[in-house]
View 1 (cartoon, rainbow, N blue to C red):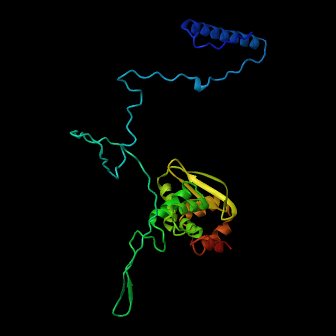
View 2: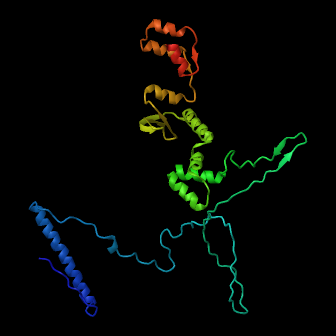
View 3: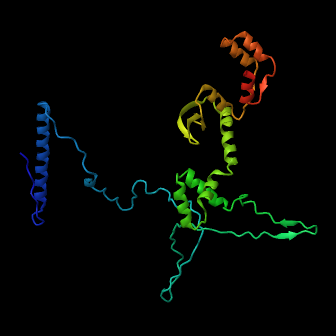
Amino acid sequence: MTLTVPEISEADDTPVVRQLVAIIRAQQERLQQLEDEIARLKGLKTRPLIAPSRLETPLPKPSPLGRKRPGSDKRSKTDQLTITDDKVIPLLDKPPQSIFKGYEPYLVQELVIEPRVILYRRERWLTPDGQTRIAPLPPEVIPGSHFGPNLSCFIIHQYHHQHVTQPLLWEQLDQFGIAISMGQLSRVLTEQKEAFHHEKAQLLPAALEVSPYVQVDDTGARHKGRNGYCTQIGNDLFASFESTDSKSRLNFLELLRRPHLDYVINEIAVGYWEEQQLAAAVVEKLRQGPCQFGDAAEWHSRLQ
């Protein structure tokens, strides 16, 4: 039997009535518990346990006067901000004979995104011997590019770190007022990146010098429209990724040796051949002639 508590009008909502309602609800809960216990003993399904709604959780009680709630004394997030503009707002309707009591600060953060188009007027001079001399561009101008370093950094950051696709990035720049074509946008992302490639090439050799161990893993990946493999070498200090066509042991050793590409026949190599029971005649043949080869092509030519 289920007891239903009727709606209580505002006129009948007295302390005694509220206490009786609480007793009825407690009895309902006790009755439900007994029914669940009987069902459990009989092997029947019991009522599922559903967590109470968070909307029904009562609000926390206000703190007593003079006491702060826990965590309210944390440092303000705006303490580290640098003030770029300081504007004084006068009070226009101040009554006569009022006394100035300083300023009431009010901090507002704003973001300004606007295009800047810089025209460099380079002086041209004609020398007495008939040659034309033109003043060089300042060092902050990227050679051969009509887009400044801040704009180029924004494009690279949006594409590589925020994963904004080229069409959406071009649309965003167009809304900012930047005149750039899809081809120019692609060149900013792909051309003149030798410094990044050089830095990436230095990562693995430098990490191997200070790492007591490395781990390696590989997975299938497409690169330049072909199926290949992405090999990861790293530990808790670094991670290096390289796309190759193979995931063989030889490929792994070549990745570890970069940027070195040479092949050398020395006592270590000969000892390895003997351990692998390579024919003595072959070993003797390999030891005759040059013992150092500039790259894999020279080494394979020697093997032939």
